[in-house]
Image 1 (tube, one colour):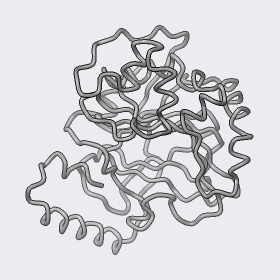
Image 2: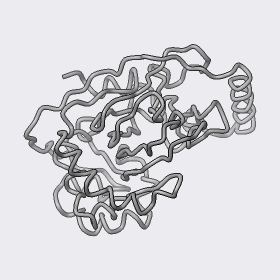
Image 3: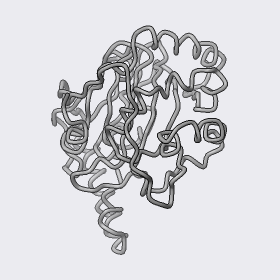
Amino acid sequence: MSDVRQILSATGIADVGGLYSPTEIGSLNAALDPFFAARAAQPRSYAYSGDMLDLGILDHVLSPVVIRTFFDVVDDPVLYHFHVYEIAGRSDKSHIFSDELDGWHRDPDSVFEPGQATHVSLFVYLSDVGPESGPFQFLPGRAKGGFATGIPSVSQMGMAGTAFLWNRNFFHRAAPNRSSVRRRLLKISVQNNRFPSRHLTAAHFAPTIAARRDASPWHQVLLGAFQGKDAPMVAKPEIDRLVSYQPSSANSRIDVSAYATMKHSLKHRVKSLMRPQAPAMAEAAYD
């Protein structure tokens, strides 16, 4: 098993093996199918953690294996995203940040620290994702590097159950879902406890926090019981399977026009000049 922290700080993206079995993925989809069928007309629809609690699948999604994975990544992981979402098909644009660099961006709600993976997302495909199905794309090894067409990148494709972790400070995007099938995936993001979680105070987290925060020491850390103070070191949960982490391999190249990259560079150069008082760390967090 490779050191997942080293992978996420160096290349930025890691394939995860053994997280969910095919049977577990099938059971999760069976529970979610009616929920999303009722929202099939929405371009982007969400099942939040509170919805998963109502559907009876919260503890299957946030299983001891998944909890162990987050404590492998960070000593004191706090949640700030936790949802399943679907993206409509027949689109020629990325569903997020599509107006700049064809959707390529770094997340402005993350903090960059050299050699650290402070903000990490877990993606698990709940539908099969091929080259036309909106695969997640990632620029490895360039947390602070430049951006240009032709650079090798990762295009994550795979069957339902494909899982990977990625550092949110690296360039990434959702490719357009040009297929006729809605793309469904599970997204859970964690950060170090020392950063305030920007999303745990949202209403959709409240039922989960009320129902599960005292369920275990791991739940207490994950659900923000120690925000604003030092989180205790807790032993990782025992699990019934081996989870493996391997660097994701580049299998594609960035294809963005020279005009788009020049526009992006000029925009952020101007932004930098207009913020002379901004700390270097905060500035580096902008996409």
